[in-house]
Length: 249
Image (cartoon, helix red, strand yellow):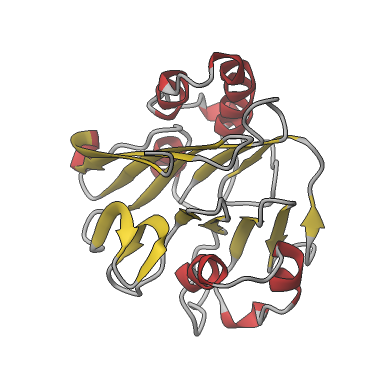
């Protein structure tokens, strides 16, 4: 997952709203969003290599999403980052208690956003242990929360404007589909070659081997009903399929 924007208590009727793009190599096997057969309370896509997920929600409105920290050349951690989200969604701990008990050193660099319905928390093993977030709109990519990368700033600004259009979710997908490359003088320096900095600077990433594989919008209303829509893509951004799930139906 390479871009997540979250509105927490920023809309009177939808206390949690999420728009996210998952960027990954196309060769890594994964399943599209669905109720999990072995954990039917979970709605999420699934990484078929390590059995975790990059983003998911439960029927009760528990939410979890993870991004990696871009650290070229760093040895991988002992455990998969997808376990961080899966274990929270399957459990019953508060977000803060769960984050406080993590074995942070067992994972490659991660950013984790969790909500138990009562609070939204953020943690990274490359930054502060736990932050309980106030009402507002937050952005996360492959650095710490609200790092001022151009695509994150753009997405967060447009997301804030799109909140007024709810329950219509199309404007969020329009944001997630933006494939504009950032000018070189605005690019962050994350340690990858310049051609990759350019490619990864877009909200929606396109290439033959790596790119945006899923765009997801999640909205949980004040009654606890979950609206979950995921659009999947193949190499060079070719549309594949959509999954639309609502716990109120």
